[in-house]
Length: 200
Image (cartoon, rainbow, N blue to C red):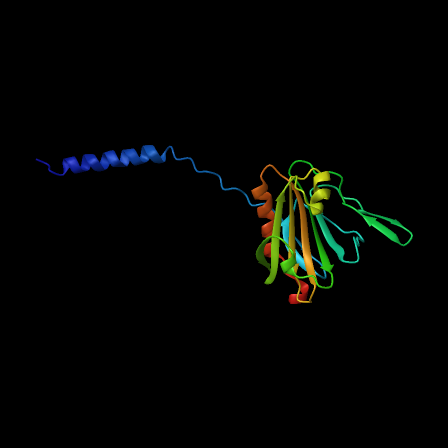
C-alpha cells in the first residue's frame, strides 16, 4: 500500500486551490504621483504640482507685506490698481473652479510681531518654527473673506518665523476641492520641500 498517496493528494489539492485563487487576484494599480515642477528665486525654493502655474506681480499689499510669488490652477491678473502714489491690491484671480487652488508666498515684517501671536498648530519649515492654520469656509474671520469671494472651500495660512526679529515668511492658500485632505497634502509636501535662501 502506498502510504504517501493521501499526502500527494493533499499537496495536489492545495496546489490546485492556490492556482485557482491566484488566478483571480487582481493587482490594484498604484496611483501615479503628480508630476512636480521646481521653483527658485532670491528668497526661497520649493517643489509644486506642475499643473499649477507661476506668476509674479509688483504687489505691495501694505508696508508690512510683499508678495513673492503666486501659484494657481487658474489664469491670473495683476491684483493691484495704481493711481499716482497709491496702490490698492486684491486677489490675482476672480474665482476658483472645482479643484482649483491659489497659493501665495510673501515676506512680512512688523515691529513687535512674533509667532506666538498667531493661531494654528506648530510645525517647522526648513528648520524654522512655523504655524499652520486651516479654516473650512465659510468662517467668521476677516482674513478669509477674499477666499470666500473666490468660491473657496478652505483657507490655509502658514506663518514661518524668520531669524530676524519681527519678520516672517507667509504662505496663504485658497482651496476649492472635493478632497480637502488631498489638497492639504499637496500644500504640506510643498512646505516640506521648501528651502529659504538666507539659511543656505
